[in-house]
Length: 211
Image 1: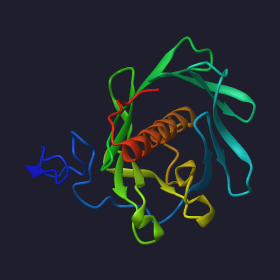
Image 2 (image 1 turned 135 degrees about the vertical axis):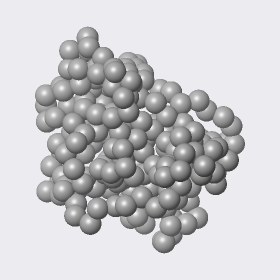
Image 3 (image 1 turned 90 degrees about the vertical axis):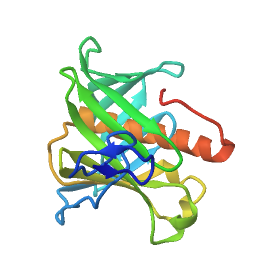
Image 4 (image 1 turned 90 degrees about the horizontal axis):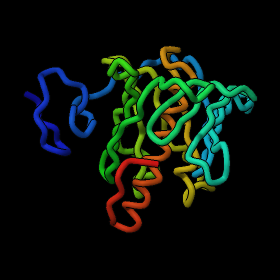
């Protein structure tokens, strides 16, 4: 058995990440070649994926000011919807997947589970190190599919974003396994969780994973 250094849970030999808290148990192999890169611009109400030409390709935004429904758009076309912890098709009538996660100050984990109960993708978090972020409470997330790393999301390191750094990310894609709806839903979960981690760090209180 492999003991998790964060939560102390026992995991089967060969596990890459803790089955309880999602903490990394061994180094995650990050592919050398990046298939595509996005800059992520986000606030509490929307998430925008811009490509390297600064063109917006995917957007997650509320359907209304007081609404709990978030629309997932490719360009101007609605391709999916997020309502609380469920991902729907464009019509909002068919459930495609559930969003699940755990949020703590030290480690966070998020995953998308399809209607058959299979985990489509999961994050493995690690502390951001090596620059001025050392003093800030932000995580890097590797998105894995089984044992393969299919994407990586990092906080952007522009000095102008020190106060609002959690609003900006770099996203590196290494494969096309995640469809835009699932990718957007997972990044939505990460952003939502980072907001709660900031609240936990600021106020020291508890916050369950949720909208």
